[in-house]
Image 1 (cartoon, one colour):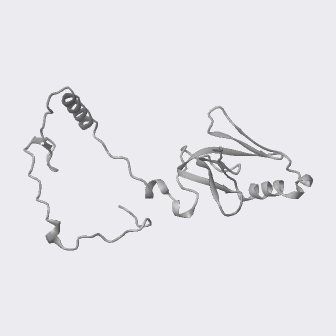
Image 2 (cartoon, one colour):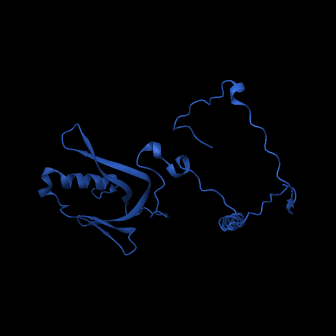
Image 3 (spheres, helix red, strand yellow):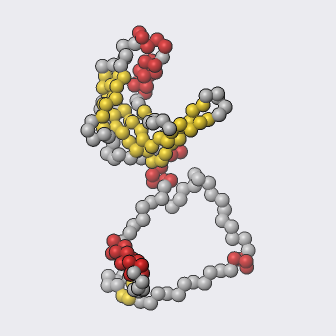
Length: 189
């Protein structure tokens, strides 16, 4: 597969690039086009003619597939694109993260927050205890089973026995228990 990237530029720069790539580019003042990055590999400079613009390499929130065709009827996948080079005007501020918050199209606006699973909040002590129990089980022992509950009003946890699970309803007697269909555009949460 080929290596490809998305180049996002301001409208004024896009017009100059389009003019440079057009047929009458030989009469254009903008005869050179250059992109160079600094040592960190994430920030750089985009040059067109004698003008320079700041550029940043950003990770997209998802993978974008690129296709091409030779006969206008069959599409052939040519690349998976996961990064974008964003060229900014001279006064615009640089992005503070390496991941671009939005996708390429309007439905993917704020995609990280709206479309993808959130990172779970894990208690480090609980993770260590579970890891220790798993190592005991793998070594042939048994895990220490205890349930610790904490009342909302009290700060001292008390050890209590695990409550009995609620009985599950019999689905054959419950009738129609189907959930209504949801589309991808429904907000979750």
